[in-house]
Image 1: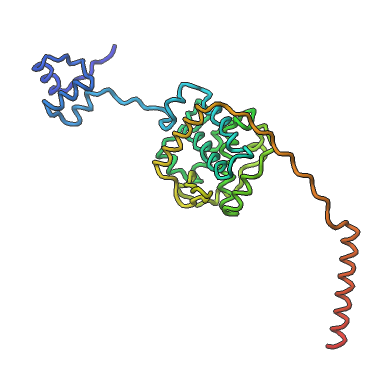
Image 2 (image 1 turned 90 degrees about the vertical axis):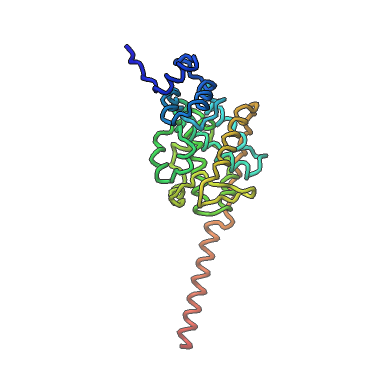
Length: 280
């Protein structure tokens, strides 16, 4: 048996005077009540239904009904992240985009379900504690953990090498097609040396420079979320075949030649030492 919720007396009196049903509390009726009775905020809060807490509030509404939306996004983004014909700066930003998708996606889809505020305040130390919550997948192009690993590798490269190192990392086309990125080894550990404040999703300018000191602006994060919707709606594209590994270049000096060079060097050093002893 449900207990009836006591309605504010001001509302009951107003309904009696105006002939309005006390149970009819739509926004238009409440707006008329506000104009005529001037109720306090607490009265209005008691009349309005409690707000329903939405899980993963940053996740686009259009993607909520599809339980496989996150994996579809990762597969669609793999073309932009790996494609040889895609500019390297676009591939760099795609890695950030896919990591953001994992951060905001509902837990039922394999994401972390974080809010926008939480994402912008996430530090490397706190994010490291969430890594065990990430799931794997049979294919790397759909693997949630691999998508995060790919972005953490970028942060590690930027911490160690700078922009040149990031560009080299992006150009290294991954030959692996199963989910081995997160199984074989942890991401570049230098990402933990990334300044320990809120900057796991930093701004990236048109030339590929990564801002190591702050997270992207809220409006930029909103743009990122809209890009996820567009990526989800885009027709699927086939993955490019990986480039064959370049053949290993033969050594320029054979072991025998190296031994001869070292012997000749020792001989010269001995002669120099003898000359020095003679004239000292």
